[in-house]
Structure formats: structure tokens, C-alpha cells
Image (cartoon, rainbow, N blue to C red; front, top):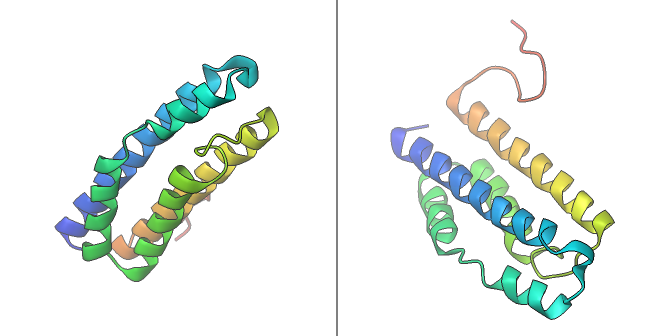
Length: 126
């Protein structure tokens, strides 16, 4: 993996982490989700332009495996139920768990492309 691909992946990871924090802040700041239309408007008002540009950079610089993992993570953050306003405590918990699983998959694929031994969340062995 060359420097451009590495930098593209790092930028994408940063942008998706920021997007996740914005979504989490909105959802956790709306106790009981009383005003659903306000919640939906706030979620849809999150600007994803920097993340979209970061994804495009990954698409032109990285392996197909990294691109696929990146696209899965992006789709989860932009078009799954929670970012679209379908929020319940159970759904939000599931959505957060899936986010962390997708993020870990992306990190593991980048590590594989870099030739780093071991997988995130597992003991590294010689």
C-alpha cells in the first residue's frame, strides 16, 4: 500500500469517526426521541461532503477489498436506519455495534494490505 492509499484511508477513518460522533451526539441528545421530525432534520442536516471526498480518494487509491469495506462503512453511516431517523434505544445500540464491526473490518483489511501481521482484536502470533 503506497503513501497515497495510506493517507486516503487515514483521512476516511477520521471523517467517518467524526460523522459517527455527530450522529451519536444528536441521537443521545434527543432523550425519548419526542420530536421525531426535529431528530430527522438534525440527522439529515449533517454535512457528509468531507467524508464523501475521503471515500472517493480511497476508491481511486486503494485495493478493491479496502474500497468495499470503506463503502460498507459509508453506507452504514449515511443510509441505514439510524442516520435516516429511525431511532429506538435497541436499534441505536445495534447500529453502534455494527458501526464498530464495520470499522474493525476496514482496519483489518488496511492492515492486511500494509502487510501488518495479526488482526485488530486478536492476539498477534509469530
